[in-house]
Amino acid sequence: MDIVFKVLFTVFFFSLVTQGNCQCPGASALSIVQNRTGKVVANKSQWEVTISNNCVCTQFDIYLACNGFHSVEKYIPQVLFQLRDGRCLVNGYGIVNGHQNFTFTYSWDQEFPFKPLKSRVICS
Ligand SMILES: *[C@@H]1O[C@H](CO)[C@@H](O)[C@H](O)[C@H]1NC(C)=O
Ligand SMILES: *[C@@H]1O[C@H](CO)[C@@H](O)[C@H](O)[C@H]1NC(C)=O
Ligand SMILES: *[C@@H]1O[C@H](CO)[C@@H](O)[C@H](O)[C@H]1NC(C)=O
Image (tube, rainbow, N blue to C red; front, side, top):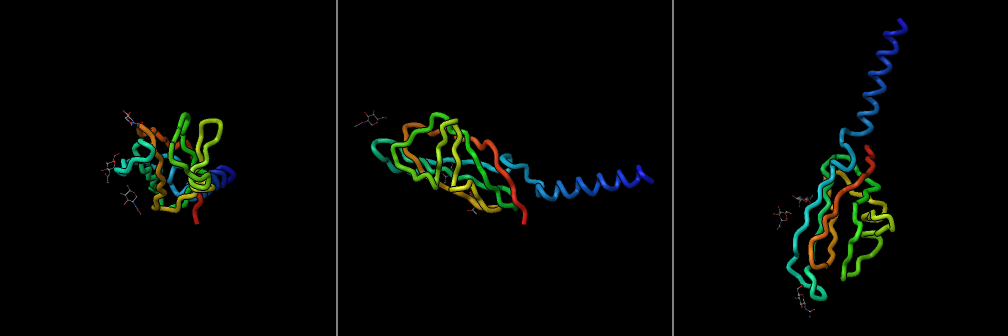
């Protein structure tokens, strides 16, 4: 009896946990593409970064690895907030709604290899 209860409880608990995650494993449900916009700012190429949330759920606390990132073009902290530890938080609290994109631009000689580090997922 006790064992059956425990098994049922475990199954129930795990189904809650998986539902809670919406089966979107954080940063792996984010993708980043970059393209030259064709503009030149202070003699540097302008790049457009598109962060796509490939999950139906909202992701927040989206941090990118951005150690050594520079831009001659000013970007506001609400768009990209560069921390001293080599991480950048995007779009204020790092929020991108389900199946939406967030884009920003910067200008530098080369493309900077932004990588998603981590995010948290909210399911409604
Ligand atoms: C943007 O760059 C990606 C690869 O980084 C490429 O697959 C895509 O076609 C480009 N999009 C445009 C509009 O140039
Ligand atoms: C502009 O950039 C190019 C290539 O990065 C460089 O060769 C050139 O000297 C630069 N021009 C100025 C005015 O800084
Ligand atoms: C998000 O960006 C990707 C890659 O550039 C594009 O294929 C997709 O259509 C965009 N989605 C929205 C909702 O704009």
